[in-house]
Image (tube, rainbow, N blue to C red):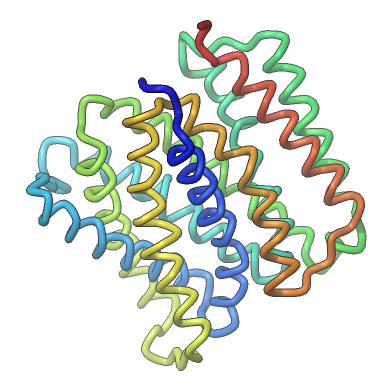
Length: 294
């Protein structure tokens, strides 16, 4: 991998900003759309963009071929479930709080890696990182200004999102030999297939009369925060490697905090700041141990 240039760092910050912007857009979209319709819309628009991208690039998409079961499993666990959990939780939770709760993914990765991946064994640095991150989230839940009896369950449901992302990541290890564009596009196709019947069985999307701004936010979530963000992530992975790209986890909650304050006027309490610092330290300790020696 080549040494990261100024352009690479700017792209990394752009990726963090895009993913950080997803939370306040989910909040805006929830004014007109249900959690399930937000999840479906996000997957549907992302699938359109990536399938078209693969067609332009001549990349094969094979959702119903040899690996269809894994595409189905990853599409369900890594797309349908987390998108729904996050959208459901954001109904009554501030977007900046959601961004911090989503940054618990490295904690889940460490725990599940210890259980299921032979080469991902825990050590002192990872253990300290997990403990600090866990205590930071527990401390955040003690903030009765932001989390109370009316939204406590919603905050817990958001935490299921990064768990599903991490579990879906374990599933993708089965398909390491499959081209990333093929894998992601095929999983998005299955995400649409899985969620569409539930959307009509449990809800009636034809009755939705969305306002303009929530509709724009939903389209943004699919095209920018999912499809374009994934393509940007792939570029950084290809040119700079996993370690460089993983640093985005440090920056996402910062943007989530800033955007929530600017666009939604959300409160920033001192407990949010403490929890944010704890999660960033936790992510650093967990990721640093995986950094290759120079």
